[in-house]
Figure 1: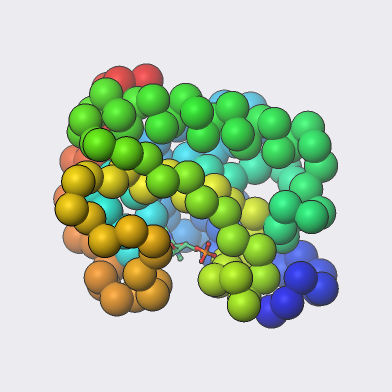
Figure 2: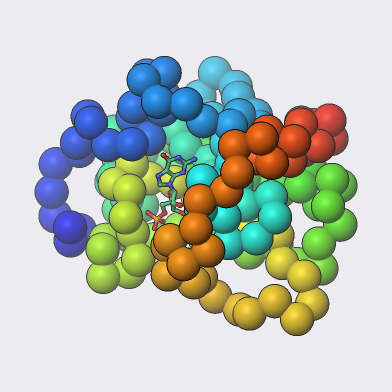
Length: 146
Ligand code: 5GP
C-alpha cells in the first residue's frame, strides 16, 4: 500500500484497540495505547498508537494526535530505559509499504538497542513471533518503571 488509500477499520491495530485481538499492554492514557511488538526487533520493542486518530501515516495524522503519541513515546522510552538499561533507543515510524510499513494505522516503534546490535530494522518475521508469556513478563518490567 502506498501513501494513497483509505483507513481500513479492520487493520490489526484497530482490532487491538477494539479488544478483538489480544495484545501485551505497557501504557495507556485517554488518547494513546502502548504495547509490545509481537515480532520484536529487540528485547522490549514497543509500539505506540493513537486511540482515536484514523491516520494511516504521518502525512495524515492530526497534529494533536501526533503530539499525544510522541508524548507517550517519550514516557514509554524512559520506562524501557529504566527497565533494561539499553545503550541506545531507536524510535522509528514508517510511511507506505515501500518505506517498510506493514500495518496502516500510524504507529511509532521504540526499539532498545545494545552495543553490537545490528543497526536498522530486520525484515518483519525474520526473528519470528515472541512467546506470549515472555512478552507479558517484559511488559510487567516496563510497567513497573512507569
Ligand atoms: P510497520 O512495518 O508497519 O512499521 O510495523 C508493524 C509492526 O507491527 C511490526 O513490527 C509487527 O511485528 C507488528 N505487528 C503486526 N501484527 C501485530 C499484532 O497482531 N500484534 C502486535 N503486538 N504487533 C503486531
